[in-house]
Image 1 (cartoon, rainbow, N blue to C red):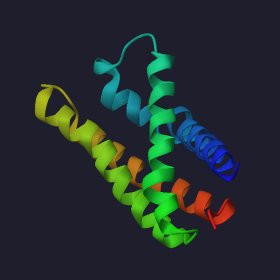
Image 2 (image 1 turned 120 degrees about the vertical axis):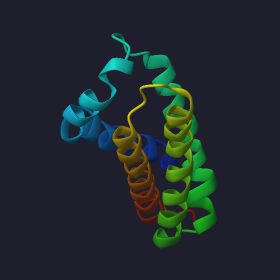
Image 3 (image 1 turned 90 degrees about the vertical axis):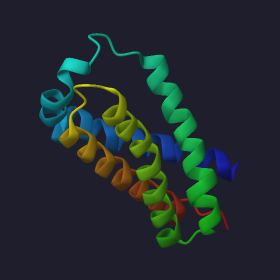
Image 4 (image 1 turned 180 degrees about the vertical axis):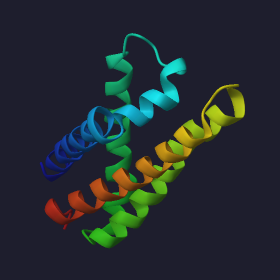
Length: 129
């Protein structure tokens, strides 16, 4: 039951923080950077699948190995966020003609930060031990 609580907390935190970024603070920046590349219709199933898989990765790779130490979960989260968001953004920079450098760098910074924060909060609030 503990893992289910951690997983739901992870998903809720990502939903809350990503919504705050994507719909609030980062909305105009992202629109300016990525508008030419964006679809007119968001593919919600694909987005949901990303969060479901990523949430499981956060718990398995960041929270569980940290054994309830929020600092350990935070640095593992930062590394996972950098790797995951970097995989997307660096691939975009490598393959797509008009992929924006500034947008990619900011997205990587966001992924690093949000994953570190979520990992640390889950480790602190819903410890494994």
